[in-house]
Length: 260
Image 1 (cartoon, rainbow, N blue to C red):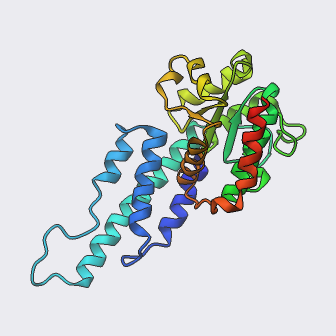
Image 2 (image 1 turned 90 degrees about the horizontal axis):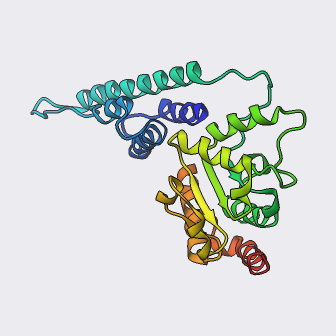
Image 3 (image 1 turned 60 degrees about the vertical axis):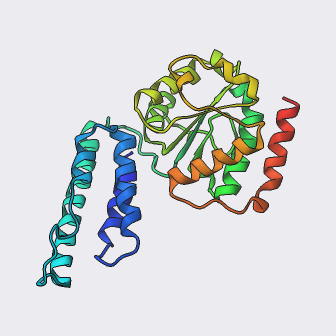
C-alpha cells in the first residue's frame, strides 16, 4: 500500500498549474485514499476540501493569483499524502526478510488443485496488460511462487496487504483450503480491492457472506473475462492491449475451463 502513495506523490511532485495530468492525479488521490481508508476517512475529506483556484475572480485577478492559489492547494495535497505515507510506515509491521515485495502487484488466491486454471488466467492477465512475472503472485504456479527461503506465512501476510489487486479464485477446492480462507478473510478485513472470480457461472452460489455481497465475475463468460481485464487495468492505472494481442490466451483459458 505504501508504494501506491509513494508513486502518487512522485507524480504529483512533477505537476504544474497548467499540466493536463492534474485532474487525473486529483481523482487518483481520492480513489487511493477511499480504497485504503474508506469513504468516511478524514484524509479523503481533507483532499476533497482542498481549493486549487481563487474562490473569487475580480478585475485584478491574473495568472499570478491563479498560480499562487493552485500551488497552495497542491502543497496541501502533497502534505496530506506525506502524512499518509508516514502513518503507513508506523502501522506496518517490520519484516526480517529483505525481499523486495514492491514489485508484486497482483495476488491470486487459489487452491493448488486449480493451478491449471490459475496458470491460464495468469497468461491472459500478463499478455493483456503487458506484465512481467514479478508483478504477479500465484504460489502454486511456476514462475510466480514465493522467493526461495522466504518465510511463507510472513511473506503472505505482507503481500496480501500490499497487493494493488487481489483476485480470489473461488472453487469447491479453494473453499476447502485453509490458506485460501485465511487469504480471503485477511484481504476482506483491509477494506481494499478484492475481486472474487469463479470458473463457471453456476459456481457463484458457492460464495457465502461476506463475500456474497461482492460482484463476482465468471471466467467462462467471455464478456465478464474482458471486464476483469478492464477492472484490473483501471485499478493499476494502465491501458489494456488490443484484444487481438492476447486472444489466443483467452481461447486457451476457455478451453481449459471446458475440460475442468
